[in-house]
Length: 74
Image 1 (cartoon, one colour):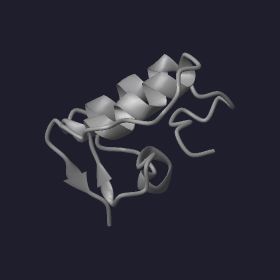
Image 2 (cartoon, one colour):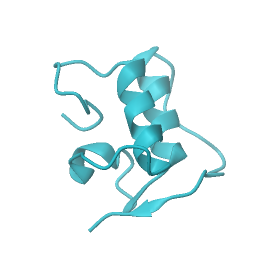
Image 3 (tube, helix red, strand yellow):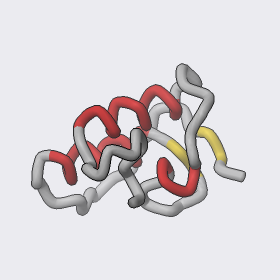
Image 4 (cartoon, helix red, strand yellow):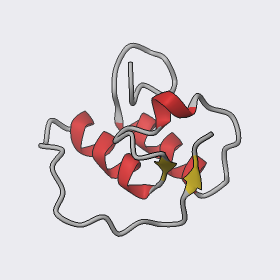
């Protein structure tokens, strides 16, 4: 499931944390197809924000994409 980084069957705030850590280079392991939540080819803070919003039941539409450092997916 896209966004379920730790493969526990749920999208949670912990998944958002793992995505942010990956975007910052603090985590090096992860399936980028699952981590790149919005499918734009970059793992960045926007992916973490969208997963966080999804995990708390908020909508996932955003109007701007200010990102913290990004890593291009392969």
